[in-house]
Amino acid sequence: LHSPRLHPSILSADFARLAEELARIPSADAVHVDVMDNHFVPNLTLGLPVVQAIRAATALPLDIHLMIADADRWAPDYAEAGAESVTFHAEASGAPVRLARELRARGSRAGMALKPATPVEPYLDMLPELDMLLLMTVEPGFGGQAFLDVVLPKIRRARAALDGAATPLALQVDGGVNRDTIERAAEAGADTFVAGSAVFGADDPDAAVVALRDAARH
Ligand code: DX5
Ligand code: ZN
Image (cartoon, rainbow, N blue to C red; front, top):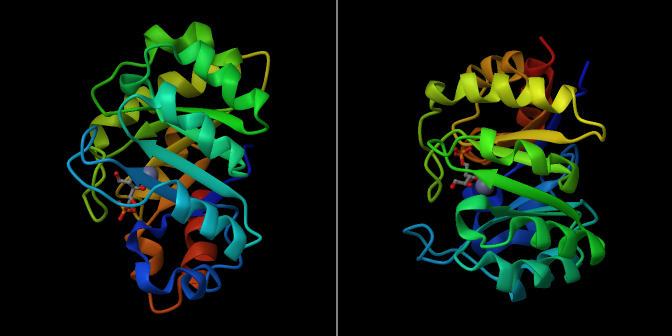
């Protein structure tokens, strides 16, 4: 029903060779870029200058995942950098409706992410303001963690709400996605899948992209 999309996370790529790593995943539907500030999450990755360099280094759409505090202040800059979508955390935004509108006004799709223990119900009324809902299936901050099955019921409830929404939204999962867990996430209703270690840890990352996307169809 929902044609699955596979977004490799470059968090598991070689940061010293990003352009070469991006060239290894031509079948990807978008590149997932994890921005961490050592404040919202206990890890530090990259920021706007590197996102701008990535934008120039690939023709693939950029799916920016902001794990940063004060998203209201910083997220619009990433839309300006030419991202296809910018996803902020609900827990890090004081004015998520205003921020989502700001992102769309700057030409990006608006995404909102929820940590595993954050309920989706308080946000259901603002779904029309969003193009994507990201349900984290690990605690954000690091690649290579195990998929949290405890999030599956929330994915099912979000799927039901999205099916009733007036405008189409993507339902993304991020964290611990591999050949095994992607089937459970897809069955629960996710349609957009982030995978870091399962792609860049493979001998052939592009074959892993294709195989993961195929596994999400079953
Ligand atoms: C974690 C990041 C993820 C991470 C996923 O906070 O948001 O995008 O790269 O890595 P894997 O697929 O290895 O769990
Ligand atoms: Zn991510």
